[in-house]
Image (cartoon, rainbow, N blue to C red; front, side, top):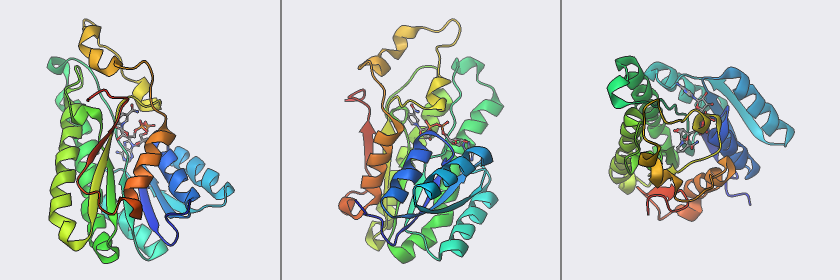
Amino acid sequence: MSRFEDKVALVTGAASGIGRATAERLAAEQATVFCSDVNGVGLSETIDGIRKAGGQVTGRTCDISSADACDESVAAAIEEFGKLDVLCNVAGVGIYGHATELTTEQWSSVISVNLSGTFYMSRAALPHLLETEGNIVNVASTAGLVGIAYAAAYCASKGGVVAMTKSMAVEFAHRNVRVNCVCPGGVDTPLARTFKVPEGGRPDLLARMMLVQKVGSPEEIAGAIAYLASEEARYVNGTAFAIDGGQVA
Ligand SMILES: NC(=O)c1ccc[n+]([C@@H]2O[C@H](COP(=O)([O-])OP(=O)(O)OC[C@H]3O[C@@H](n4cnc5c(N)ncnc54)[C@H](O)[C@@H]3O)[C@@H](O)[C@H]2O)c1
């Protein structure tokens, strides 16, 4: 498939996991990709891999919790490629533990990356997406749809991403810019491997996450992101697409 011929896509979180798989998938479908991540080493690996596979790609480091850095990142993509058709907000972090023990710093760091960072990138990209009638795909989580114990900040941040996705979808629909999000369940990435029941916690409270004894792959999530970002999803707007083996059904 080459659904992204002549399209320019910016992917955050491109150094690892779902973000890397998304950058690879879009490039494999002929997109010109601008990769972004706070992790420069992983970012270079992604860029090298895509180049070796014959893809058109560049990128730069960016900490999305900084509004200025997000503005600079989008400006750099525009400077490099002249336009922007797709923004994939994939970067994210997770901190888990008893809500009573979550520090103010931990709360702020999760909200500022997952929620504020997604907003800062979208705000910077939207003027360019309005020009191309492009679209945004955010990566929320099933944690944005249902409660997951020991993940208050993470759930709050992802619930915020779901709500923001819907708000922007309604706001920009009449200008032909779509905004959607995917809500993955468990996906085998470094982030997911950091999740564990805290000391004194009750594993049974996590039963809804264990509906099926399998996890998704980053490539499966990237496939859904690519669909939403493509013209095939022309009529899909404001959706929160769960990819979770039925966890939230
Ligand atoms: N893995 C899962 O089970 C799962 C489930 C649902 C949602 N998600 C979401 O998927 C997204 C991707 O996560 P993943 O599972 O691929 O994990 P990952 O750890 O493999 O990738 C996350 C990437 O985000 C980058 N990042 C972190 N903070 C950043 C910052 N301040 N600025 C820029 N980049 C930053 C990291 O460097 C990393 O490359 C996240 O938003 C995560 O919340 C993951």
